Length: 221
Image 1: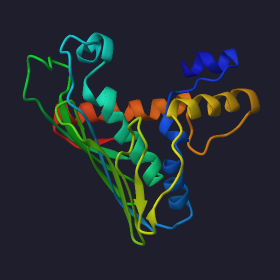
Image 2 (image 1 turned 180 degrees about the vertical axis):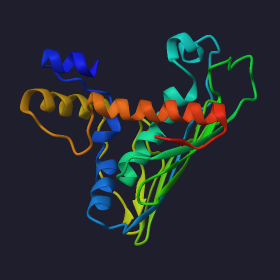
Image 3 (image 1 turned 90 degrees about the vertical axis):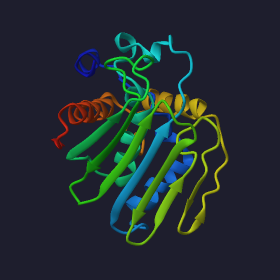
Image 4 (image 1 turned 45 degrees about the vertical axis):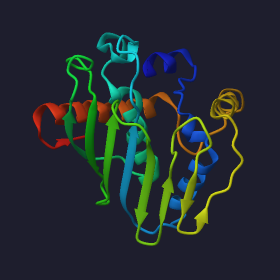
């Protein structure tokens, strides 16, 4: 898709709505300007209790996997833009309590860890069996950022060592469409990329996580 869009001279944009969310962008700005100091740790919790067992999300042929392909990707992507680095290794463990609902190739719950070049680490959870999991936490030598909810459609709530972040809530998809239009029509460059290459980076990490689950070994990226 990336290659064909380049050949056609058109933009390939991925629906990363959080890349335009004001509180998310403020945390990224603070990190870039060194307000958290050296980043040491990220935690990402992403999950909910899945409903109808016949829905497409639980069909491997349609979804490509399970919770990781749907909700877990938020913690992967969040770790990358919050830490500001690309992971170089992953480890992962899968838990499956209902093999009938979550058939072969459809993951129910995966805990995974990532390591970054600076030495920072991430500990994350992706699940279809637990509610109230929508949290990011970033820790550095000078401060922290906490977001809960961190990726949901409703207002994002965030605070740092300096206090709560106060930004007006606008429907995420509205902001996303306006910003993507500006990328296409005006050549605007977003603070956090939303191009096809960004999506490919996330998918390579997903593949590494599935490999780590299967082998029980640390997988280099």
